[in-house]
Amino acid sequence: MKNGVFTDYKVFAGNSHPELAEEIASIMGKPLGKSTVSKFSDGEISVSLWETVRGIDVYIIQPTCNPVNDNLMELLIMIDSMKRASAGRINAVIPYYGYARQDRKAKARDPITAKLVANLIMAAGADRVVTMDLHANQIQGYFDIPVDHLVGLPILARYFKEKKLDDVVVVSPDHGSVTRARNMAEFLNCPIAIVDKRRPEPNKSEIMNIIGDIEGKNCIIIDDMIDTAGTITNAANAIKEIGAKEVFACATHPVLSGPAVERIENSAISELVLLNTLPLPEEKILDKMTFLSVAPIFAEAMTRIFTNGSISKLFDVTK
View (cartoon, rainbow, N blue to C red):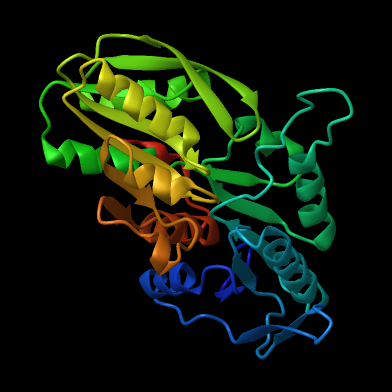
């Protein structure tokens, strides 16, 4: 560090999404740092750093996706390893933040696990977190360190803008995604519709009503993540049944667990646009899926952090 500015940085990766880490590092013009993340025979995680990080600005790319607990522990141990090796600053780059849905007490005696994970990351020694499309914005406040909360909307919005669809309506699959839908609708200069649903139990949703005019329209459903795909496929089937011309869907995080792939395959969705914040096995990829990369926006954010540049410019959907 010289005059408060780091003179060099290094990019490291855990085992959760090496392809994305390689792409980000390539855009930044850096090789991935030399490290090994392995396991002992009893399942304990072992981290070895094979190059110095003393006084360096380091970035650890590790989405905490399935297997969530293993990937979270890898991240924590890598942070601890960097801290004990006297890294100048430790930036945890978490494109997908696991446990983000457990952000509040929904009923008596519930844990707030998203806060627990934030505590663990800080206790391990992270100085900054870079993430994308948290399930709840309030999670930023769980940290006592800087959090750069990137958004995937600009990538998705530009993709649909280039498709030049006519008679477009952006659809929010529930009340929680209304702001996201409105922001995309403003960029596409089109109206929005809202699917009113109730959730009788976790991972199950029931359509109640559709607010807005979707008959004869090209509908784009947008959400932050798709897990079991019940919400988005129920919404797609419902709006198709009442007269939507064609149904597109998009999301930042393709978790796609349980029956998700089968539901998407058999749904009214004609194209599903996803970002690559977490890896997807080949057997879960369908012909109707289109993948867009978040590597450029993460690479730009990490470069701006290193140079003390402005991150807010990356949130502008019109750029």
